[in-house]
Image (cartoon, rainbow, N blue to C red; front, side, top):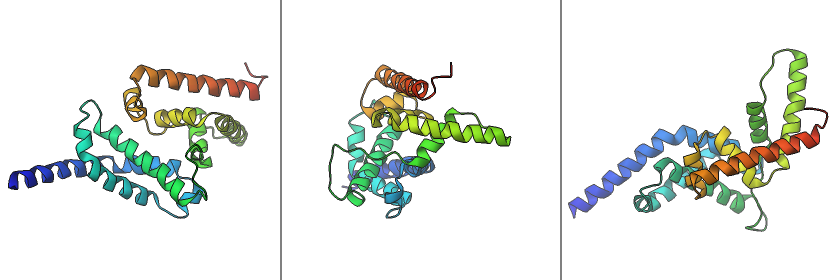
Length: 196
């Protein structure tokens, strides 16, 4: 009996170490993706706490998937908890087919990551105009395309980690990322036909 308790205690200590090591990275991910309507009701820490409780209940499931990185498993749980909280707290009528919205702040961060910063007033004006156009182009993408761009540029996940989160092969994740960038590029060219 003591061996079972010790084993369980060791597993939870390992989970706690994993949670502590990735807490700031996961909190940053939740804050970037949190819709303002949801953040008025819940904090990012609430989402993380919910995910940690879920991780504790599902910890043994990770052991059954030795090829899955513990971080990507945890990342997926946190993302699932965020989506579920949005559905539960914000949406008046639950519709599973509807996607979680892309917060304006996330589009701003992604656009600033794709566009270099400038320091002069004219550069600031051009940067703001470009940011707005990128935001508009991002809004034209499907949720899945925005999601993979976010995972790669914000969350700095490797293609292997993205593949594990999405449940696809690494090459499929790479292809999806390239296609999302191509779609963004196409939308950008449609919005700015005068540019080369």
